[in-house]
Image (tube, rainbow, N blue to C red; front, side, top):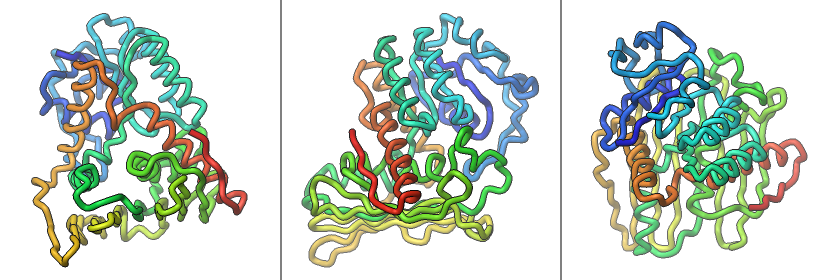
Length: 349
């Protein structure tokens, strides 16, 4: 049994907790938070944009800590799960790795590529695994798309377009602070940057147009250039200020013999599946595969199952690796550079 120390009990900590409760081979045995009432199991004030609201939880069997240093000294903790604000990810991850713990860190792994590199090097030196919680590839529409692409029966991947927007998160005072959360690119668009890196490889350059808010990009449209000039890939993401549509994400993926489309949004607090995953095949056949009950927690359960497999086999996760997560941060940084300079920005792996 893999024993987890869960650090940070906000919305993502709550979602991770729910996923661990349904997972096998792994369990939360320790909790670390500075909030005394949350350390006591009162999570009723926790809310998010998906999943159930928080509730009273029996934490009597958990070891409880208010300081991360004490948890890192606990020899019974195998894996530290970090659900802290982004500006703390790098330093706390590195301390946990140096303490001999495996680390599962929420996205973005860090606010800069340099800090991501430091985390990867710390894991290498410690001989421990570093996982970064890019859960998007585990959501059923995205997981099925990855499966269709991997099967190869629809031919070569030709490109695609990806979209992810939210309304202005006025309740998050640090959202546009580049030193604390990092803004819409690192908090939101990084999901699609990671997915594009996973599906198509590392872009050679990006050309982005966007709107700035202070030091960060508020909204961006990006064309990605790859060593293979036949790949045509674009993405848009960020904040749209009116509050009526609080969230949307979608994709259209092109293969030689098929097109995959999907779109979901939340309007006025009501979720709408605008277009279920639809596969238009060569010859005119149109498929809409069955993808389960739609519970978003299932994706986090699959993500944790990936962590368990990697720890049990000793093989790095193909989806949760620090290298992929670092590259996603780099892509976002280069998109910001391109918006600021008004020209393409080159990337290096």
